[in-house]
Image (cartoon, rainbow, N blue to C red; front, top):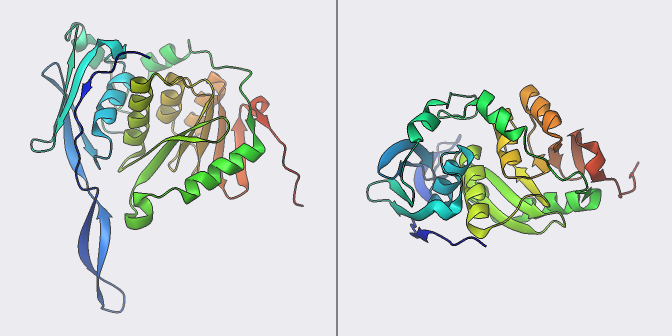
Length: 275
């Protein structure tokens, strides 16, 4: 396992209570997710401001840098310090910011987020990734994963208006679960946790409550994960990219229903048809 950088443990309220009036004119108190800005600094250089619930800010900062290819190795990161008094995350590296200008210039806005990734450059990089062809996911395990997420305690169940992402083993064990106001923040936080813990993705399953756009698929590829599951669906480009990368993509995963869109060879059907 690589050495871990020095991390803060920034904590803050994740939900906020407000008064609302229902359709009958009755006043009630409801919970809504907190949303706060987090400005990310890399070696004192301002990179981006992310709107986040703040559930895993240190992991979010790391995952963002990893998925945007702004830092190539966790060993190069000395510290991540989050301070909610100034809404900032300061990341310090051992090598400094050499070459940062050229890497920042390659980014373009995509449909996935206001900051986005350089689609063409990123596609060239992820094309070189080889996902394990012998990885297998049992249909029964898929159902177990869907049930695990359904039963997982979550902010969404209390306050709504939020996305959840999870990383699970091929046997269906939950490894990480992160919620945030945007699915990109949640997947970046999981990428950061994987980076910190030295967790490889080749035998893992990624689940999201949101849609699998092209950028979400490419982030999954960067994390080396062969299985992508969504409670929602995918876009045309997300499906094209998944097929190009040889990923197993399943959409509309709910109860005992799913739609297998690519990577059919990795899914082992082992549950009798009820019909």
